[in-house]
Amino acid sequence: EVQLVESGGGLVQPGGSLRLSCAASGFTVSSNYMSWVRQAPGKGLEWVSVIYNGGNTYYADSVKGRFTISRDNSKNTLYLQMNSLRAEDTAVYYCARTGYSYGYGGTYYFDYWGQGTLVTVSS
Amino acid sequence: SYELTQPPSVSVSPGQTARITCSGDALPKKYAYWYQQKSGQAPVLVIYDDSKRPSGIPERFSGSNSGTMATLTISGAQVEDEADYYCYSTDSSGNLWVFGGGTKLTVL
Picture 1: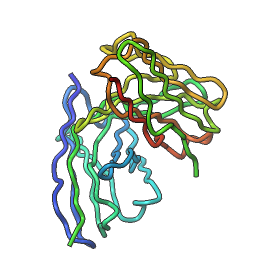
Picture 2: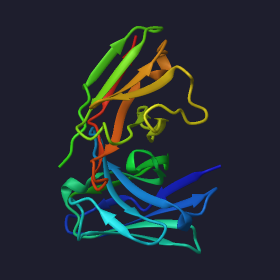
Picture 3: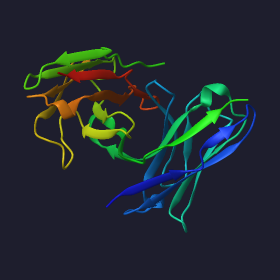
Picture 4: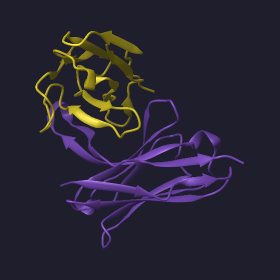
């Protein structure tokens, strides 16, 4: 059974840093694409970052240069290092296994999600 | 930038058919996906590749994609289907990964 469990959220001051973790079970993180998706309070979903099985990483413009996605293969765990945090980064952060569908020239999508961890950026 | 547009809300009575639309310029070239999010819970994939249902998703959920509009249809909606529904896809280049704004489905 695929399971994803996030941790590491909390209250942080503007300009501060936080590292989120996502422990996976039922599959191998390094063999899959993995993403972070966030949801501000009362708002919709926003894709944040992806790491491909080969190690390439990509980011939404809103977090580029501030956030870093990574993984620890020995721990089967995904991470999101968040630096220079802003009030607008306040959200529930979900990790999601990311699939790829070959039709229509290829589309990435999210097939399994964790329960999320809340990050609050406030003074 | 790329946007997917959904109606903010849809309301039906139990047993009726609910239809939620999602419009986007790249939908003729890219698959649409649908996620259900109940209050306080994580999103769940209910439709992938325009019209396929993951294991465990009831048959009353179906999807279609024609032209620039994708549609999630819930045939015989039940009270437990009350949730926010998000469509998802990418732009034609595959570089922008975008969710629609979400549609609140009320069944009462």
